[in-house]
Length: 478
Image (cartoon, rainbow, N blue to C red; front, side):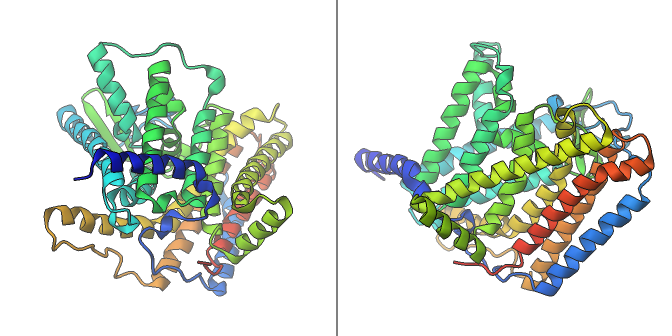
């Protein structure tokens, strides 16, 4: 049992660590260690890059019509504000009582796990591989829910712990709690700030993923910010200002599984993975989040390469910033990626003779998501699965001292991991090309002009995919 004074000291230490931790360079992927550290061989890199270019050219040459992206349906999406497509024509119906019970258990269970992780982050062992906070927050929650969204659709409206607390308060109040309407000018820009701060900087560039108490302080601080915003602006705040809500919703567009509310319960069906990527996003803030998601997962892998260290130390010498130069390098990269995408979208609109760059930017941003999702899965699934096994052992230790971590990926060879990464990245690229073609034909009056209009975006996609493949071919620097 820990006393109040030591607990307050840990809280104070966690606050200080949260403020000062940008001076360290760390990665959440170091929490549990990994044996998948060998880079893919160059022959596999060159073969995958060649296949990417060849398959892109083949798809563009053979595709003459828009892929089916809209079917007649009767169900409404779980979160209607960003409906990417209508329901599949064939679906399985789940009765409302069963679906509602499953959602309630998931909602309450996730809130309980988050609360438990925060408490253990303060009072538990401060070894990251032995603390529920570091194991759960960075792997199972942050990355695991992202993978879940990419496979079965966005679960965050149900799982969000701050939204659960808000809904409980609203139920007590008997109505939605909001002091004012959400300002439209804010759009999804608060979510972008949250994504850059939590996923981009805190996860990849600080020691927070290795600090249980720092992780607990981070979660508490973000929860307070979300609840205060929710009480001020109502439910819209949770949909548009929560970085995780916007990120998981975007990833859910790629999911092959489509889950929707229907009059008699829930409808569950399958859909092509490009379908949700053919509907424009609602704002430029969402565009920035989508492109930042593409960049951040690549940056995460890039931070382990010798080239990154060379660039970082050169920037530190030139600016005198010290370790904080890594944050500047990350933010410059985000600005470069967003600027390049907006420029390509504007060029595409110009080639198509479409008025204005903004509609093209909103329309083409979702077509990048399959590449981001494929790389997210390929880069992070060993990290998630490995730490789930570690977490099972740690939690089991509270029940039985004999409990031990499990190794779910002990059967997977390094060569198998290489192959899975390459296949996922190339497959994600192909899905993105199909989605982009579906959007391009809306801008072009003929098949021939559609190919010309698609060229700038196809070049950008090929470039991003090749860079992703190159990154995983580089040696990992400790």
